[in-house]
Amino acid sequence: MGYTIGQVAKKTGLSVHTLRYYEKEGLLPFIKKNSAGLRVFSDSDLGWLELIECLKATGLHLKGIKQYIDWYIEGDSTLQQRLDMFKQQKIRVEQQMAELQKHMNKINYKIELYTKAVKEGTLHPEKETA
Amino acid sequence: MGYTIGQVAKKTGLSVHTLRYYEKEGLLPFIKKNSAGLRVFSDSDLGWLELIECLKATGLHLKGIKQYIDWYIEGDSTLQQRLDMFKQQKIRVEQQMAELQKHMNKINYKIELYTKAVKEGTLHPEKETA
DNA sequence: TTAAGACTTAGAGTATGCTCTAGGTCAAGC
DNA sequence: GCTTGACCTAGAGCATACTCTAAGTCTTAA
Image 1: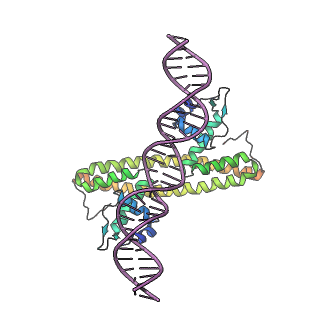
Image 2: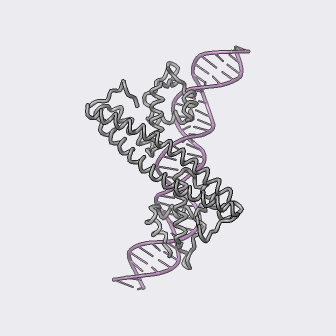
């Protein structure tokens, strides 16, 4: 039930460097080291990495993620802060989804436009810029 | 039908510095300058800025955006490349949407979990890590 | 006519998030 | 015993995308 840093790198797609960097930044405070000083990642550590990815991908910086982890370590006195953070994050994701849909519409329009243009061999720039 | 750089900054939320930076990087090659050397942004330039934002927000780097603009300038011989780029971008957006939905699920789960925990005054860490 | 305020260029500086290097330890296999 | 390969630390270096500074111009209004 323990993984080396190399195994975790393969599993997650993160580099060994990045994993060490995350630990240095306080994002992986639960990793054990064995007698030889080697990191031993547990399944729970993999869970933390998943959460880090989730928060990062939804717009939180490493600092914000560290804040959450610090709250987690602090214990039950920070439950409300953590809940608020996830609620805030939810709002962000909803905004991101709406934005993404708008961008998708624009891209679909461009695909239509360029599909026609490729067929005709020319784009009429007086009708379409950008 | 012309805007100063300051007006465009206000309209778009980008900084004056960023607008000049974009121009320097070749992302705004159609901006005119008046006799005093001041930039005069047209509505078409605002359109380009919208497209830049769209491509940036969907994962293209400024280099990739510049590539598109260079193709645009090159003319009809690059119609296929431009179409392919938008198609590629569409695939990316679809992936991003799927990812975002997964993250949303995780966040919703956390909100449920922490809502309960706040009510009860404690989170049971043996059941939930990260 | 002079001061404010928005603009100009060239180029330096910064924040974020890696990414790599140097120099070293340790365990396994030939 | 020696090499290989994965690991270690500390710290330097890098890419991206800004962000700011210095020094100067131009327009407008008191």
